[in-house]
Length: 112
Length: 113
Image 1 (cartoon, rainbow over the protein chains, first blue to last red):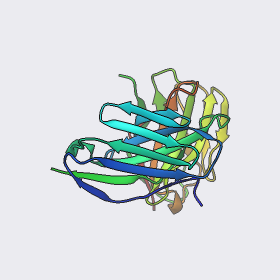
Image 2: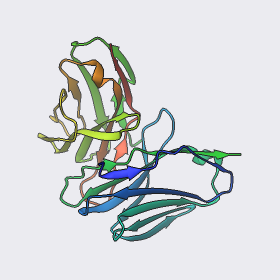
Image 3: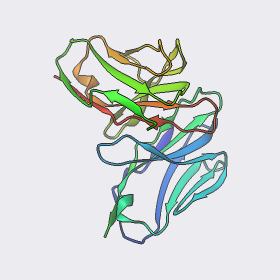
């Protein structure tokens, strides 16, 4: 079993929809959680970064972590065609020397 | 511009021919890491480095070597490439401390025939 599981999709939504992307993890030591966005033929870029449980908002994006259920979520409001990309969740523990463990990614398409 | 630069972007080679993929960052970051990305498997860490002359194995280190002689450079060496090392490779760097994520390079697509 992978330490971070992510539904690969693909996921297609109409422009303006609210998108919910989710991951689950199994390692209780994970304390830092990230979402990366990866466009085709590009490297991943950091989108959101959260520590422990709680919510973090940045513009149209909200990251949510529930450590009790080991659940990580990313919500995108008012989705745009430019949001079409693969979204990767990632985690690491405080004693891991920044060794990120990634989910396999969810491919999102926002249709105009 | 702050960035992680990998070269080459694309490489086709034959089994057993030693190759090096270079990685350089201009942000004075302490941490550097190599990942490979394969369909259905996501990004998996090959090696990482916490600072100059400090390197350690990630999840899939077999068949790879790294060195960190300078802070800005972190080359990935395949001494005897095999077809199962055909993959998309990413170098990444990060400052020390837990408040930062990794900045990734644009990737190197390697094909071993």
